[in-house]
Image (cartoon, rainbow, N blue to C red; front, side, top):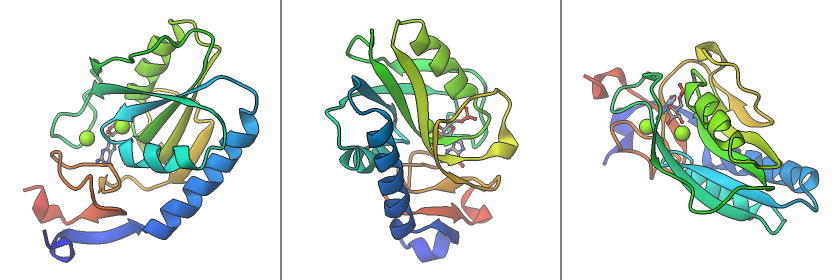
Length: 180
Ligand code: 5GP
Ligand code: MG
Ligand code: MG
């Protein structure tokens, strides 16, 4: 895979991602001291962010994973959210922190928050690495956010295009010709 040939722009480098992840981890450590925290990773996109972020949270947190579908192989949200894999554990009384790769329309997280709140947790908040505010269709409060980015389809650091490029350790924009 020759990344140079398909890269339009490197948006966030490994160093920028590492620094931001440390900041977010420190803030979460401060805010959740003494609480029962459950980190919920939204598969597959948030997997790399989750694994880096949790190392920067210095609390005895629990982790769990959920998979939802909303996109298929397209680059815009369908608005239809389906749970592909549910949590394995009960969330009752726990402080849930949803760990997401990116919010665009907000439709996925809006659904997920309502769904998790109905299960009796102590609280539900979001930690998203990326946010595209211009794409918003549903209102969601993001307690923790890494970066606001412009309305461009990004890949790498867990984010895919047609299931590829998740393993690239930084975030970049693909050239248009890759989509056609
Ligand atoms: P939303 O429901 O907020 O529109 O979209 C949420 C999901 O769509 C994200 O968790 C992510 O999986 C996918 N998504 C949104 N924008 C992008 C993007 O720029 N690149 C990639 N790879 N996925 C995106
Ligand atoms: Mg996601
Ligand atoms: Mg995807």
